[in-house]
Amino acid sequence: MKISKGIYRAFVPVAILVIGAVLIWIGGGLKAASNGGDIGFVDVQRIMNQHKDFKDASASLEKEFARLQEQLNSEAAKLQNELNTKVKGMQDQEKIDQLRNEYAAKIKKIQGDYQSQLDKQKADVLKNIETKLDAAIASVAKEQNLQVVLKREIVLYGGKDVTDTVLKKLEANSKK
Image 1 (cartoon, rainbow, N blue to C red):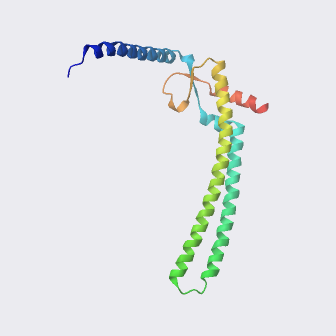
Image 2: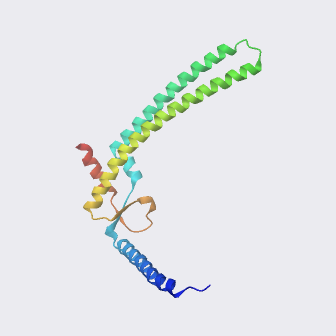
Image 3: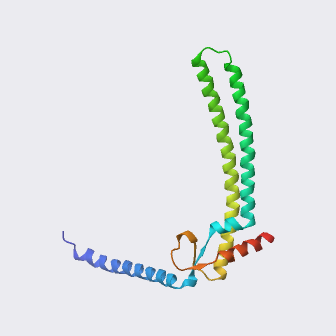
């Protein structure tokens, strides 16, 4: 296959520009990576284990889960008693199985409703916490002139651990 001279003349400068842009971009990334002060990392799990807001949110969600679990158990027991009363003395096994399936579906729906409630509360709490954490990380990154802040789990080597500084920033913001 022959390439016409016109296409070749148009392609070569574009290819050179693209290759040059990639090399500049890679060079900038290498410069940032070689300068340890430009990349930071945060141990999010440690922050969640140590900071009061995160502990309080976790305890609140656990309480809500226990409350919903108790309600679910109560409603399931009521439905089970209702089912037992209905099937008592019934001889038609097909009808008994049909009632059991109906009650099982009711219990499953109630479980789904409670799970949805819990999921919504969890999402609301996590969104609030993530907003606070992101703001603290952004503030620390700006103060320490960090170009990138990563999660500790993905950093194999290098970088600057700013976890303690982020924790202090979160604590200071909580007192406001």
